[in-house]
Length: 423
Ligand SMILES: [Fe+2]
Image 1 (cartoon, rainbow, N blue to C red):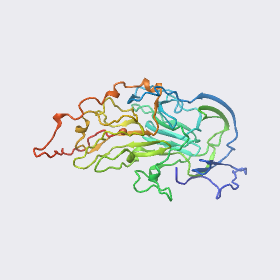
Image 2 (image 1 turned 45 degrees about the horizontal axis):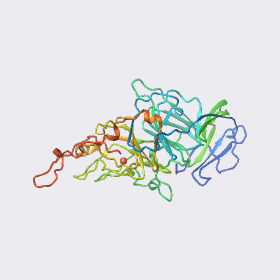
Image 3 (image 1 turned 90 degrees about the vertical axis):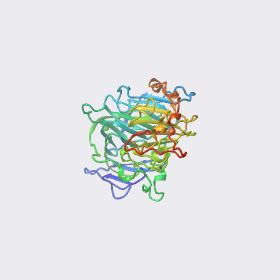
């Protein structure tokens, strides 16, 4: 995060003596990024954070991509995915490249350990479920439709609340950086002088939920911390609770942002995807398509024009809304529209959208600047009919609605009707 925050106890100056109640010094740790010229936080531990044992390599995290030389539209129906693993081991990578990895996780079991991703930042979008992320920076209470931003190196453990009867099981979309870059708000939303969110930004500091107490777990014993590094998860053992921080301050920490707190930017004519941008990292962006008023020019076409986003691959995860107009798409669907061929509305949907003034779509998009590759897990969920789902009569001749004088007839406005504009 770009702005300064403080939690717990910190001494009045950096790098001075700061003592525990028993008189011993706390262990200061400067948690720096980009060679100590990027966002940095200073933490105060009860124990020396270097005091660990063992380095057992556990399992590889290198994704295996398939069809790396095949360019086609893809649609995955992820709803049938069966629960497996925990909130970390249960992540099933569907698409990725050397910049990011995109997975869906339907966890079956709790994390019995703490975890540190030493290779990249994580953006966890909670589709279903609620719970707590216990981190070295404090506690994050998450709920449905939260983005959980966990910066590289954060020790954490994710605990889901028990699922109430009738509620869907926990489910997450996870986007991890694979190039070591950090997931941050777009710089154009921020003041160059103060990093404060500017007035045109679709969200601001008040929408971001920062870590809270409890922060400190002063316990001894044997605590497993799994660290992802060098494309492998390693097991380390701490003889004290790894979340032993009594205080910290700085600009590098995890936080929450609920997608319902994204305030969409609307216009008289169709607004392009960058208006939906929420986060970015090197070579990819994350966007939120949220319920909103549609374009209000009297002759507006409220769904997207056909477009070639010639430098990007585009992945959409469909969270909520009515997607009947998009052939085969359902809640939990993931589509990939690759660079190389244009995409746009399905047949008949343009005429059908005219006059609509509201969409209830909710989708998360990840646009990458380098091609994405599928895994075998993605192929296992593939909807083979999707690539040819644009065939058919796009502009039915019978749909012409013209006044005798040649002027186009403007359809009457309708209220609260849904139309899919994502993608
Ligand atoms: Fe698109």
